[in-house]
Image 1 (cartoon, rainbow, N blue to C red):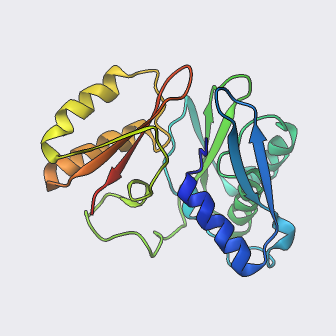
Image 2: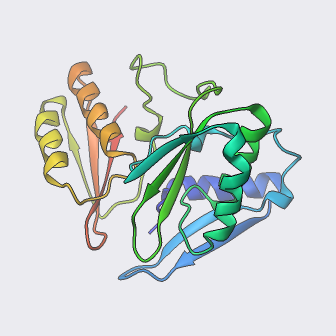
Length: 221
């Protein structure tokens, strides 16, 4: 299992290779298969904030609790990351700390998202304001960020759908109230409405995680 996305992890490793960055490999003994994460070793980076990629922190992840913070809260949050040594940070623990330092230095507001996973909680961060949309974001459709839905996530089952299947898929998301949507449950519903209105084809990807399944959506170019 690669919650950060198998292809994203490969791209991350290629980037480390080309730039000479050190990185950390983190593994969790999950069943039936192990779970793997990669994090950048911040000691190998140029001085912050030069060259820091905020893009992973502009994605709206699903969570059980959410609250907004100001740049003045960064010191507290940095301390909490250190304290929560067993908790999960799919965006990368060091990346999250670097993100908070960036918010602190630039005066950005940010959002903390907590997911009640067992045995330890899972945490995400999102930038709220003061950040420009990534340059790689496709221009269409207007007003909606397709970037999280153009990433090719790993899955056990995959099938393609037409815009006419959106109503059915929207109903299934509501029905699967305990299943996991790492791209964000509300974002997935918005994505499906966008596909429905624009006539886009899309891909459904299912991963057999326990106790509940994990679902991803991808736009088909």
